[in-house]
Image 1: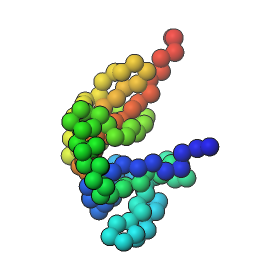
Image 2: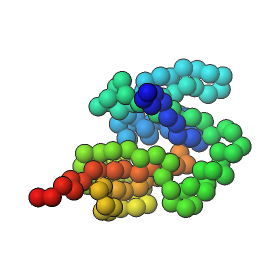
Image 3: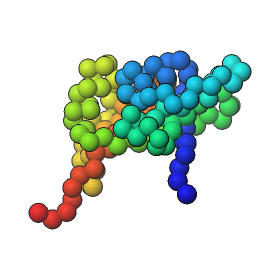
Length: 133
């Protein structure tokens, strides 16, 4: 068994598509009209057949209080792995991305958290080699 698709609730699919593709660098995998919304998924260009991220509209009444509570408590909705956190922080900063947590050491990882402009906090993780020298 493997994870096929996971989701992040977004305030606006058009805005989310632009941010997740043009800024974060994901590729659109599916863009299927479904009434007033779309089945809109993105994937990593490094793994085009990997797990899809559904940019799901925040329409359900429970979603806004849930998202607001996560953001208020500083809890990321998702976590993405990067090879070089400092380089990614610099690249995203040049695109105007707002970081709410600058890169920091956190045990076996380095992490940072940014605002995805669609109502979510997203965590970036760089794995750190913790094996003895």
